Image 1 (tube, rainbow, N blue to C red):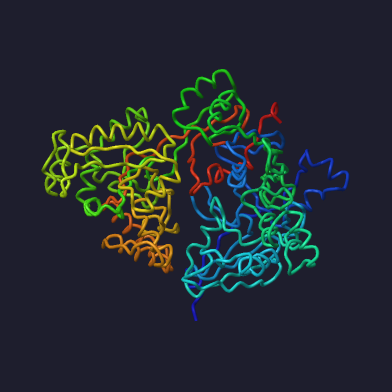
Image 2 (image 1 turned 90 degrees about the vertical axis):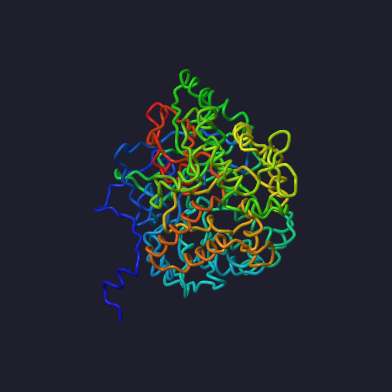
Length: 634
């Protein structure tokens, strides 16, 4: 039998700090009239027994209730950003990128195989109905494993090599998920910007499910909502991430009250929200959020006209000067946050291109090194980014615990002499009358770089690369298209190279999946066919034929089975070492600042932060429910 120490080593318990002593809860002013009228319970009956106490300290201060936050979005579907920003999750990342319980009171994890979820007693949905294990049961039995609603079966994060979890409902507030092998994807999926929803408001959704509803009523619902079957009706009402159904109960800090289509959406505070500050005030501080829909091209101008209180979406660095000038006329601040991608711009040699000559060349690491050495990153930094960014490979950022300087610096120094020597060593010594090298089949070495045609910034960067590559005897052509055409050319193998952003999450920990470093998806533009092969289980695409790529696949599979942090860390480091050596993607710059406009009356928004969807859910890890307005705006 394992002794107590062994059990403690094998078990991770994610705890949320509870109040040391009972706080005196203070009613939210905007809800007082409803409480007095008896249409809403008092705060002591609205928050869970073990509510989550949020201690606001350091450079932030406890706030006051009130006010309306204005946002601008470029299209209606962007109202889902409020679900991302609100960032209420079963477990979530804190500012140190550590996982901790949130909606859950706590979670116990045994060897990444057994996960015991403890719900907060007295926790309620936004309509006041209890949040219990029944909501987990409904999702698992009536949605995830229902072949009509989930034709492809449960989400892959709930499967370990095809094995589904044993789901147990130990009592009204305890749920357990168990697998025979480790499932390291489970907790990060729950904490994602677009989370894995393993619970649903059963009391609301049962009315659309034939297991719980009369057949005649279901038929009427199908006709009323103009759907083909009951599944369409159910799915249409069950969109927690898209936030398009105001009737759907939620656990988020703000609840949508506006049915689409609309050009103005209003999100009101959730009166049953589970977080409370150290002064006994239920969060969020801000009463409501209004989203005005405008053309994405107009968002920078409207932001500069003081039509938004917290704006980062649709803003770019080339808006910075204009916004700073506008801030002199209006009371707002323009802050520069960092992005968390491995590269703001990276070249993707298509190792699966249909052109056999280019395929052989691009798969040769010496050629990729030569391409990188012939890029004048310092010039790009100064000309395009005013010297504000970091010249770097496509890799993890210095703030990442897995970072090594050589990951950033390998093969990025501008060295035309060495680049030309490497190209000569490859036998590319013949040139045409323009000085462009010739391929083994006699064609000029002309590389067509596909772009999605969405940014003049990409064009500016490619023009500078064109000039330096030409000095190495390589001619670059930029081929703009729509994003759909861009992707199809890459997937089909017609593309030779593409330009796109780099690693989507350059701030991982050893607990983060390293799948982005291995051929696991066709959306990895350096090896789409290898990624498709893995993604489809061999039904499409091609098996990797490079030893380094095969090793990455094997390491990724080993990480999924690893049971200790030390094992996962070692796997991550080896995969990053391989990428540093092989340069499958050619990073140009990273740590590009992103402008964040903050109204002068808005408090607790960090002066510096990371603005990216992974891992921080944009504003999410900074807890927007703790942002508040000064007295004039309240």
